[in-house]
Amino acid sequence: MERILLTSNYSDNPFAIDMAQHLGIREEIADLVSLKTFANSEFCPRFISDPDDLENIGQKLKGQTVVICSTATQMYERNSLAMRNFILARAAKDNGAERVVLIEPDLFYSAQDRGPFRRGKLERDREVADLKRFDGQAFTGLLYAQLLKQAGVDSVITVHNHSVKVQNIFEEVFHEDFHNLIPNDIYAHYIRTSNFVQTGKDGDNLVLVAPDNGAMPFVNQVWQALQLPECKRIVMDKVRNGERNVSMTLSPNSDVDLDYLKGKDVIILDDMVRTGSTIVQCSEFLKQAEPNRVCFGVTHFHTSQEAREKLNSKYLDEIMTTSSLPDIINRDSQGRLRQKIVVLKISKWISRYILQLLNMDCSRFEKDFYSIDMSSKNPRWPPPSSL
Image (cartoon, rainbow, N blue to C red; front, side):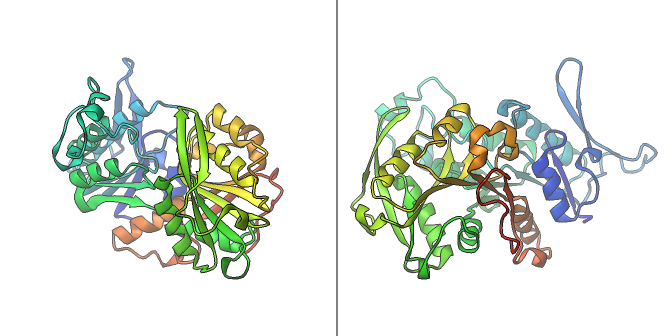
């Protein structure tokens, strides 16, 4: 794999190690770049070169695509990881890299997607009262996109970004080189081929739930990928009474009423979970209808203590998530939730996309495009051998 060099902004990143394996890169990621930190705490990475080569100084990476795999970790603050991204990208370009691709499954600063001013089409629709809410702070989501571009990043690949505003920002800065991948095909395959739920004939035993209107596009994408015409969709009307206090009612825009759920298997789908308040309220509300099973599928699982405690609720039977935040695979950090979490590892899925992006052969991933990580404490252990 001579055209691709893959590294990470911190050593021994498990997500990056998996991706290198899937891409067929034999070198250890730690052997490709020295992630030095000076005594004064400044980060100074150096792509490792032959000490005797005096002819190609500054050209070691000529013609290569450098992929920087950036995932959140408890080892470093996101601010530190972001700065490392900038310097790594610049080091790659300063040493001749033809293209720098940043893979950041949970895109940093996506929650800071507003600023205190109107800026072209991005902020044209905002009222003065809304602008005032951000008076005095930076428009950090925009700044991050601009700094990545300035540092030398050519393409950004992220997964299921929750903010339409951030997507617009990155599309404005990177144009067609911003890629927001939606894992609907992974969820659909796992739902259909595992015993996570019982779908019934053509989906007549399955109901997909959007906990709010914002989650409905994702629910529709999973529904389309499932190809189960009898599967029903419902959406909740959420009223937030505080940062962690929400109430739920069934939206009239749903396919069916609450009574339909009796005896059915139900999956709530969303892009991220931080505190778990919304999902617990939603599952408790749905349990009133006496479904057989209420599960939760979420792309980005922030494993805070609050979320772990709340999602251990008796109203929620099982959780399906991805490895976009690799710390989720650490069973010891999940507490009791390890008994009801299955992690769908997406490094292979993203590797396939990179090969497609570079017009390289990815046929080996046609059927085997993700992997499963499940605790032996989960009642469904082990997973079906066919997966």
